[in-house]
Length: 184
Length: 277
Image 1 (cartoon, rainbow over the protein chains, first blue to last red):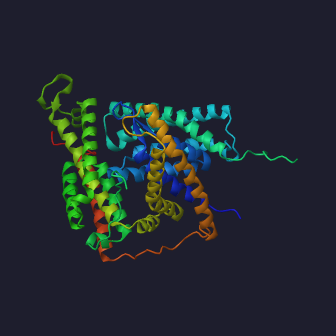
Image 2 (cartoon, each protein chain N blue to C red):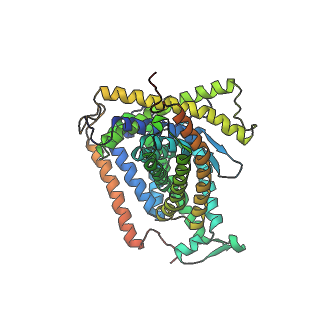
């Protein structure tokens, strides 16, 4: 039986994924010593969940997780940044459709491609969508939001490149490889 | 369990605002915060500020329930205001098209226009924060999910949001349990440890947390599939309540406020109310 719309698994992945997003965003941000620049472990997690469950889940986890976290922590939300996170999840999820982590596959070539895609996604999200949204919706000074965007692009690209790749590799390692059973 | 595990949650009560339908509160929150987001009309913002503070009082919310988050927001808002000023102290005069110097100090010259612009930013914070706090503290999470569905979000997404709200406390408990177990094994996470050690220590908590939660996704989705979740186009909600007179009244008020913003847009010829003309 083919299901219409979102599968049950996607619905649950969005719900649980958003809950994990909120907890990680809240407790696992590590200050680097540079003001306002933190290592956010939540973005590697977003990359993992988007590659496993695809672009729709990636987008929704980013959107719902970020919005809920902003509301629960700050009592208001910056929709431009919420949308940027969601787009990042969408882009990584689109590339994730070409990966087969479920069968333990994550080769060196795929790692390189994954990182190219995530860096492009980060640039689009933090250097285009978030600052333009801030200017259009909140009418903040352009140089402030573009500097914030640039620092987010650099930090998040590096964090996903290192921790995201580790997470994906670790996840693939827990899965059984295709054709690993042999007939004796 | 831990000192910093405070997350805002539903507090049962029986005030006028508690008794309002969750859908009404959601519509009001969305419309009024969009209105406050769009307009920079100081008069409108002041009215909404006073109104939302009165509502907080009306809902019987105590200062200690929200003090930690309010302090946090104030610090955050101040940092943001300072950043806005430092990056472009001339932004206010560009917006309002005039220049009344208060303190002359080269790059950091303070003008009346800049201060007025910053005042508007502060008012925007005071407008939206109490409304959101009010919504979070007086709305039952299950009713929130059904109200999302009611305003047109698909029920699958609504259900995902309610799952997220349901699982935030559970995953938080897991997080602290894993963290305590790792600390017992000598995992150093405090400020004393070097950056590399802290990243490694955090990964030691995050990886088991993520992988066990991904297993949980499989278990829950199997359970939901067995109960035939998603097989129909619609679903009913156990907590659904019909609209009453006061709900229609509050919804009408929200629409009225949006209309006022549209009218103000025409009067001011744009988003900004300009007293310097």
